[in-house]
Length: 98
Image (cartoon, rainbow, N blue to C red; front, side, top):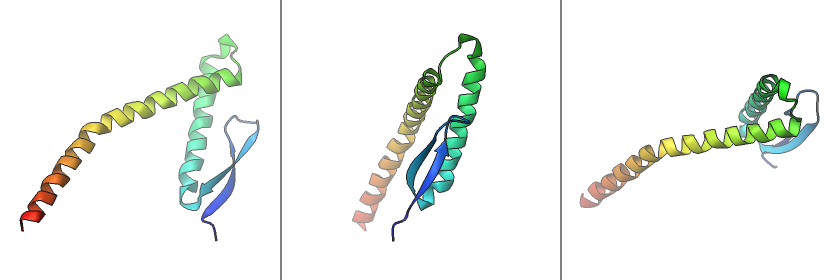
């Protein structure tokens, strides 16, 4: 039995629903992500209403915004990852000495 399920996600309100296969344990997270995308889309649509941008343009802007946020979070975790590696190495060395 597969641990994947098929769900329908609607990113642009009132538009097409996208079928997505996801792991069962990821359902809550994926649905929250879709909700976040809808909220972000609505905010962009309102912010740029006078510019009369297409939905495709708004989605591209959202993708850049989300990718930038993702990269910023990755950069922010580098010091922690480095420190954890260092502490793990030190712990391994101490355990080898015993």
